[in-house]
Amino acid sequence: MRRFLVVTILLLPIALPNPTARMQQRVSGLPKASDYPPAGPNCKRRVKLEPWVGTPEVGVSDTYNCVLDIHMCDGVKTYISEARRSASDMCADYRRARDELLNTEICCDPKCEKGTPWFNPSPDCRDVRTPEVSVSYGQANVRICGYSVFDYRPSSYKGIDFNADAAYRRALIDFIKSRIGSKVCCDGFRDSGCHLLYDLDCDGKPNETDTTSLNPSMPNSLPDINIFNQSGSSAIDPFPPGLDANDPNFFPPGDKCDCKWELTKGTLTCSSDGKQSHVYQARWRCPSSGNERFTRKEAPATASCTPPRRAGL
Image (tube, rainbow, N blue to C red; front, top):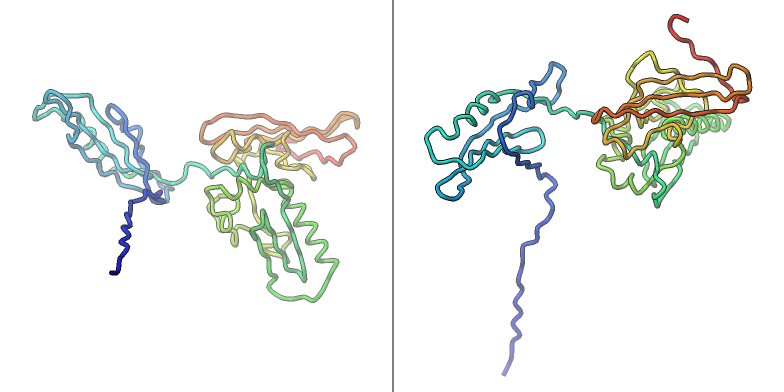
């Protein structure tokens, strides 16, 4: 007599994170029109509001809650009323709010560029590395945390020139250090929300086109990495040679702002007597919170320092 072993496999649904899940927010009360300002002429991504009003939430003793759903840039925001007795006009105020917002176009452009705290390592970072730069036969490659983030290929081959390769490599190293410093936290680098293989500094520009030039004969030969923005104000003096942008005495903490810090003022004061230190004082602003930070960087009086030319002087 043959015996058969029957195996029953029970498949249970597993809840997996949905990468396209949208934000859902529930608040009490009515929306204000001022919370949804119309998109300006320079807005690139617009969304037209189509609010919906209903009474799906039933309370106790024949009471209801009016509900107003507004589909926004990144999800749905739901406004809920207090419990109300059933009546034909019980949600009239919510319908007026809906009509006031209906067909309003709001702007969904990012309010600021995402910060890059991996370029300003904290003391508890476990995997700190230095950017790797290689130059050979006029071609350059930059690797950060094991990833290739920049490649340069000259338009034409000009032959072997080891001196030119060495000079280009030195210039590339100095340029990268002036932009991001000499240390990168690879913990945060890998865990960041930006796709760093394509957008190293989270500014929305692809790495292959986010470049600048070492000189007119070498266009696109440097990665245009920016870990902070400048306000465009004439009140910002040029950085002195050798300034490490992510020096803890100069750059504000990356974890204290969810955007890139904005440099709004920078003042370079060279030593007047050859004894006191040169000083660069900076004022920073966090675009999302409006908070400001003040930092300063000093250099010995023996270091090179060229007084900046300012308007009216």
